[in-house]
Length: 73
Image: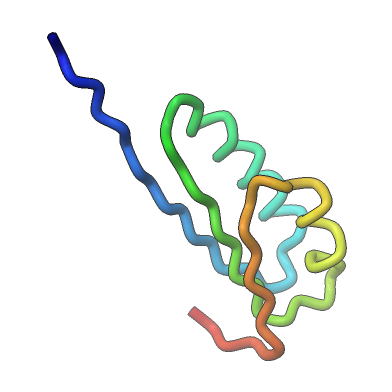
């Protein structure tokens, strides 16, 4: 019997005022991870483009970390 191997993948993306680009990226990632045990984490560096309000509502499967300052990469 062949044992099934589960893949664990963490995808971490840093965002700063790139709401539309991150949205496109997340749509692409969602398509690419079908069948893979994955976690997606967005670290937002205090964006002021509506990312904090918009993205968590649209991507409920994503974990978000919202920093109070632009800490860079």
